[in-house]
Length: 321
Image (cartoon, rainbow, N blue to C red; front, side, top):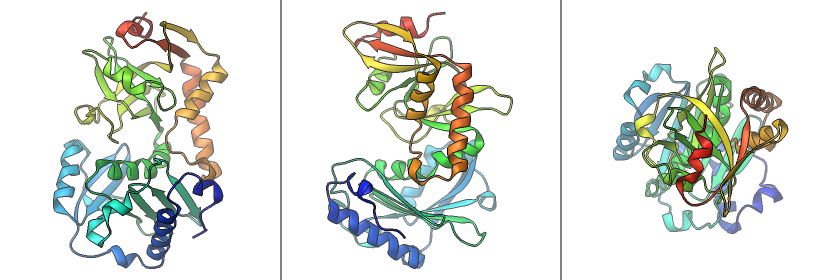
């Protein structure tokens, strides 16, 4: 596997830990049997169109996540096309305090000949990929004491695979209005996405971090809960689709107002909100899928900039007819 680039290295403060995880990844790429020990506890699901199996060395961890996903997502093992092996830091005799000793939340992705390594403070992911036509296998080492490790690994692996199913994962809050339509709230970290969710009142919150924006085969655009972590529990809404009501780019302000953005600006905001696409590693076909989906959505919906105060007044601008 290629060495860590200077750009990737700048994402981390703890260079010693970064290099240790990269060395471990290269060791696994040479011999995946290093993580293939003991009986695996597993379940298989169809995750937003991706048939996969999650395998754990710890049965309690397996049951915890199996109970999170809806029963209607469960599939037979032989329907799965992707095996994801989760190995806890403690199960391979590593110190969790040392493993998580990084302040930055960024994820570095290194790709080489179809194989890929992802390094983040709470997980290491190795996608073996090149298996001569066999089922794709991914190995994850994570801190089982924190749910972030599990969800961050899934956030690295799945968004690009979902493109072929007509789905984007948006870094967003998504709230179901009183009109039963889904409203996406976009913006950089600190813009107020989670704040908007806390101001939802009696409205349903699909998620305050990662949400699915999909296009059906008939061309209808809909929202779904992502099931990828966050402050709000999305499990009650997994598998349920909601028509989209609008998209709002957030800006905290001493006054509340809404302004329609140009189509070009709206498209750029949507592309910027596509989570974990890791553009520098993508094949041209992946990039084209992203651009095609965002273009289709942008033609059907106006995007607005929403300036808001820390109260519920902004809902008058969001849900107005």
